[in-house]
Length: 212
Image (cartoon, rainbow, N blue to C red; front, side, top):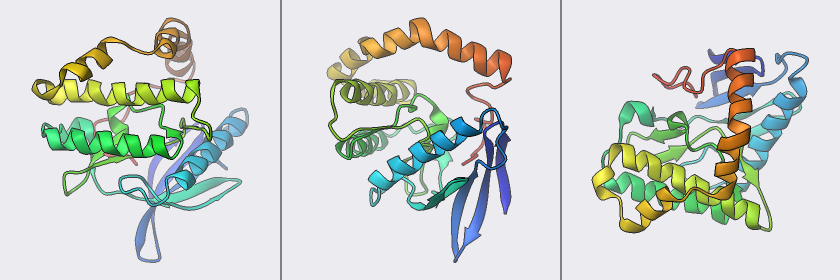
């Protein structure tokens, strides 16, 4: 068993179980004052993965309980290491994001390159669904978050494969959703202060290698 991560929200381990590799998220070791949030994020991830069961490119949920969850390990390199420049990768990634949305799941954290993998076959995979938004009705808020999922994918395409951006994709990039503009103006400064100043985190901490 290999510990991949340990912070105020608990620990994450890579382990073997019945001949397969899994990721175990343990919230029992979370700090007492954040334990409620750690458990809530874990439940959210379990709910999203349950919805996504069977979609290739997303982790399969193995089990979930009061103190954490176990999910499938997906082999692959994080985007910032693999640096995918093949337009086929982004076409497949867009189909994968659309598959999430059809199941009523908006990932809500696809701006982070660490949440994108390039598998050994060159296909995309998505991990870390702690911030996912799950909706049965797919109303206005869901549609706005889903659009931001797509826009974040296109931002990565702009970074690694800019010459293959279409005119429509450039228009989407130029028009962030209202919820994104509101977040950047109000929520992001507060988030940055709490995570970096109070908790000592960095958004790209550990981004140079594959964590989970």
